[in-house]
Image (cartoon, rainbow, N blue to C red; front, side, top):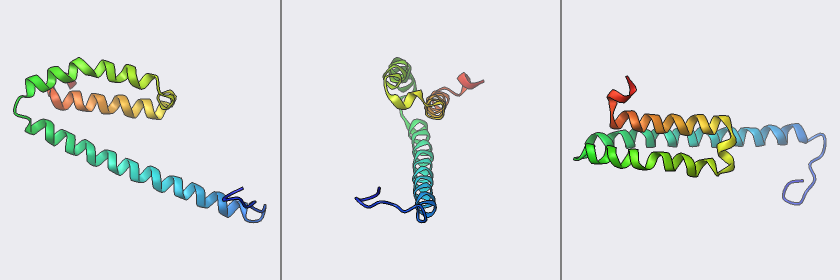
Amino acid sequence: MENGRTISAEDFPQWAADRLADQHRAIDMMAGQCKAMRYALIMLIAAHPDRATLRGKWQAISAELVDAEMDLSAYGSDGYREAFQGMLASVANALDPKQGE
């Protein structure tokens, strides 16, 4: 049922294909937004006037971020968890490139 109407068996394959295409577009949009934000964040880190203080603040809060995320249902998804942890590692590496070696 969609918007109060029943989808016929004949229309269902097209309806399902349209919904999947919508979800695919939404995922693509979010991936593009995340990538752009990653580049912006790396640039902001590189331009920060006091990298040592920024690094210390990040190290002080990063474990708390993981703890807070673990309480969310999305964290149970392997893909979400992998992307979240990967982005945290990317930020840590931008703050201290020697850490990634």
